[in-house]
Length: 151
Ligand code: FES
Image (cartoon, rainbow, N blue to C red; front, side, top):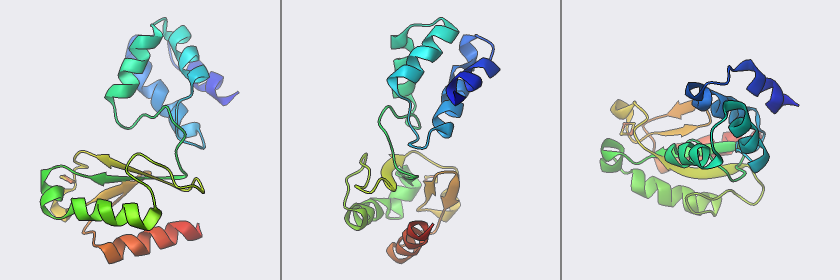
């Protein structure tokens, strides 16, 4: 099983926890960490489940709930906020018919917020999976989502 192979790649050292969790989550088609996987990581690293859940809940990029094929993260740090990210979030909520933190019924999109993506010069910005998009307007967001739907 792929999760076992990922875990085996890493020495059982606590400092590897983030890399292991990232790799496992990236390999999951629903981009999340399920209970069984978390137990395996806990056993491999010999650290308690509550410590692992502490890490998972601290970092917003980890999820214990199944997510969509595309994870949309809208930046809501100050520069993006000033450039209208709040109204873009509302726009996306209407467009996708979900609230922040939810996944569309067809399992294609999950809408999340994030802190600064490091591209404040092109605020407002968002990330979809590993790609960053800046200078967003509602029209540009519509076009991006439309293209994703075709994939
Ligand atoms: S504040 Fe949004 S990218 Fe920096």
